[in-house]
Image 1 (tube, rainbow, N blue to C red):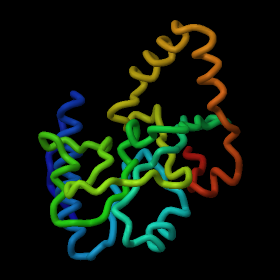
Image 2 (image 1 turned 180 degrees about the vertical axis):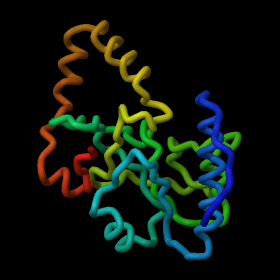
Image 3 (image 1 turned 30 degrees about the vertical axis):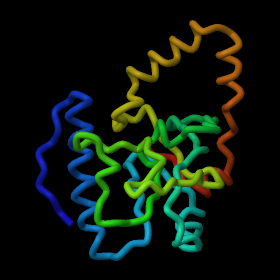
Image 4 (image 1 turned 120 degrees about the horizontal axis):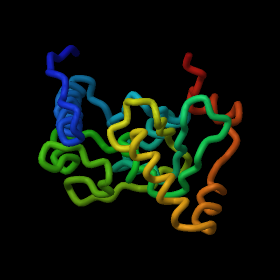
Length: 188
């Protein structure tokens, strides 16, 4: 499906409204494929190679939020493991049962990836495995752009050694198995 939307302005609210408009259009278009579930995936994210099979085997589920995920900066040998609330940070953090009404996913036309409840009141479950990688520092991020990353790093250092060490312990080697599971390959 091709659309002819004007590019958004450079402010964060315009970018969020643009994303919402594109998602609403895509969700309406998806109806013709009769999906059991939908997931919005940003260009700067990669999902687990286990995800499609898991959803296919659990088609009666209301859906899931990705509680555990990775955060990755290009050309690094390490990857950050976010052990909880990944979907609160990453726009590719929800898999929900398809319906004709996705209003609960939008607040004032802005996509809300922090929901844990469907429009009918049914709750989403945490995905039982690491579900996605949020790739940051690439110029495509609306939230974790380079300015925000630098600010968070500075703030973390100011909190003291305990906070800094606790954060440091969340890093993992970027192994071949992680690369394979999330189809992470070197971009040149």
